[in-house]
Length: 169
Image 1 (cartoon, rainbow, N blue to C red):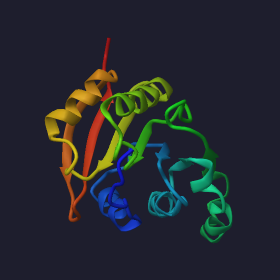
Image 2 (cartoon, helix red, strand yellow; image 1 turned 135 degrees about the vertical axis):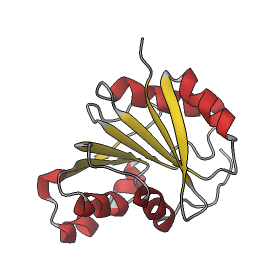
Image 3 (cartoon, helix red, strand yellow; image 1 turned 45 degrees about the vertical axis):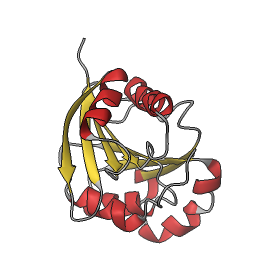
Image 4 (spheres, helix red, strand yellow; image 1 turned 180 degrees about the horizontal axis):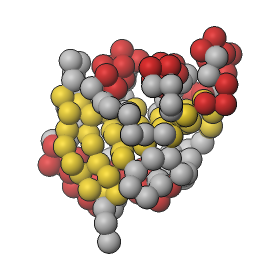
């Protein structure tokens, strides 16, 4: 996997600022790192519950960092491998740079895992820097995974939020 520019918390925050979570109830943040951005999202949208999902080496120690947010049962930490599976049943999946540096086959596998795990009608929001793939290339990846690509939202930072839903039929 190629070395990529880091996908920082400030880029993630800029991306989620342009998103509306009023109709969401459960968010899975894939590639969450220490979970801080998800904690900030849950603090801003008090009706939400969330799952912070990342590799074991990335998520270890996050519990102590997140204790000050006092989110209790609204925030769960889950360690795993995005290429194997992701937490199921959420209505919103936030991919925090999870496709960055991945070849097309791995990106489609990740998106397919999200589609398989998602609740019916779930939204997928992929935060990506537009320097690796064109909009058309992202659209193709989503479609190959069985997701309907809707649009890319620009942000105040050099990151876009790619919006998709489960494809029907």
